[in-house]
Image (tube, rainbow over the protein chains, first blue to last red):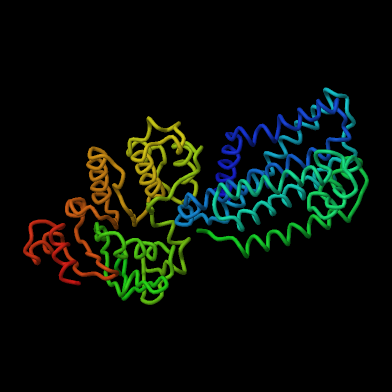
Length: 229
Length: 237
């Protein structure tokens, strides 16, 4: 446990030292909120976006570079397992995203007089599931793409269309029919729905179950395909 | 019980016999060298010692345990410096030492290790900004931060300038003096001659000679370990 806490601390610190991650997980959603004139209806979608930027935009490149540069191999000859490093990266991503999310919600409420979330616990649960889900997809990308550059690129290529088609960055109502139909099949769509329910304070079981299902499937796929070297 | 026992170790990759029947023992407190040119099977042998690779045949025992089965338990007692492994680019020197210290039940004080290896002036420097020699020194220090009984150092001084090399030799001698069992892997013959109590000379996946550097030099009628190596290597073809 001591080792895992130390690893998580380190991973979080490294994440905070990465200017791109920091910008896209804190300043960028705030900028969008300002452009929307503080419309709090957009906030739940932005929360999904923050998580997706971390889990799919940043995580695959980090993990693939740990493998490519033999950081995982070095860890394998300590009493710590490389799996622990992957777990620490997951927890660090969740915490960093949570920080960005709390900042966004706080600014929305205090500066723009936005509505507070209807059910904080439900919203937190939805965020947690969303964050774990996008990280599971990030691990699948890191398992499929061997080199760090490629994993980073594929992460971006998957993440960007997804945040636009799932309703995270722009409301799905604003999309043409054909694009909206594509969104129906994207894993981030139920995440945006679950966050929307948490925000409104309306209970809904279905999107939560879908998220849980994607987490299980993604983790199993990543575990089966991941190569340590 | 010997600290390290390797008997008839074999490891094959495809058609290549990387290690083809290697046997040696390392006594407690000894500095043991594995010497030979690239591709002689040195690194594969070492990776079997620290549990990174599973032998195809033969037995390996380190501190009485099988590394392939008990890698994590043994990792508490073995410090390893691997060839070309690295750390996250933005991790700082002091952070790396403190982090690795947390992995072990009874670590050496990370600040002491940092001081002993001359890393204090680099404490706040990120791994990505270190020179090759500085990285090497940090990776060596990380191998020792767990206060191990056995230290395995693969390519100890590759990338170090002559001054740093001599300094590293002195530190290895300190380890010897403290009773630590050290396994050195290198293709620098002068280094092995200067540091090792005994060496195993590897060629094409086999041990072609074993003994103290002096014995091997005398047996081959040569003037240095390097000349002895070429005499042995040539005879084996």
